[in-house]
Length: 129
Image (cartoon, rainbow, N blue to C red; front, side, top):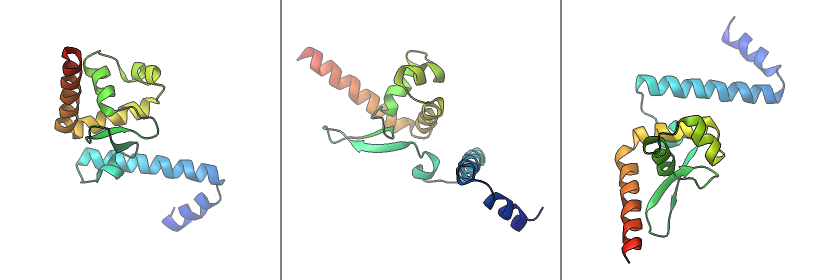
């Protein structure tokens, strides 16, 4: 089958099926790109992650539309030994969202570890105040 024939067949699918196909293809391309190490910017590599600035002025990475910080997911996974499904259940997220947050952490360990350390320091200061 030629590319043109494939395109014609895809355009015959209902719109919802075409969108599903596009999402699956993009996910597959993203995974292959990450596996072979091609550079992607964070927006492409981690579409479910966003930054927002807290009251401290520090930028925080969180899961889009939830306000749940990546550092929270990391703590649940590394310190509490929760697996992806447990975290997803506890925070009302999809396993894919949790997995992406953990992949984001692997790509930004120093940044997220700094955010975790800052949070621990703030909590300690508040307790001793």
